[in-house]
Length: 203
Image (cartoon, rainbow, N blue to C red; front, side, top):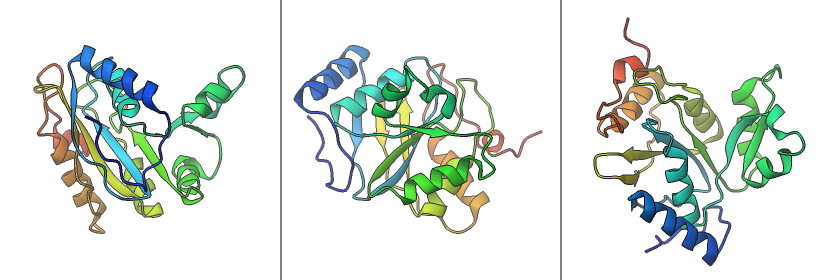
């Protein structure tokens, strides 16, 4: 069954995309648990990233729930002929040479959007034990967007939509708390995210 989606969440698609999404998740053997918060601006953090299938699993969720998800990509990817497709898929072109910086550019995009669901994989790689990129935290806090954990639990093949994390004002403690949420869920290889390494506190 498709979950009830709050009206504040950006949507796209229809019956056909829902059917494709259900088919994808069914073939992959995954299901979804949880509900989306009634927030107009959300930064969704997806982890752990441990398989080439993660993208297809995420697309299955997006199609099943008819979500309009945005993502970040370097501006060179948005040139013709891929540009129109990248934008249609929700891409936000980022100029890495812009003196404003990546975070400033994304915050500006969130601020000028009435509704936005931005998906980010803070690990940036399938390799275990990497330090997380903390940009998602500053993008969300500076734009007052909700920080929503989305876990990929390979032990049960469940996409878990978890309640938003409310920032405390202590960035270091907040990041440790957020990473700690994901450390509960096993990767495809059975390993787990190591909080100390993820937040850069190991040697």
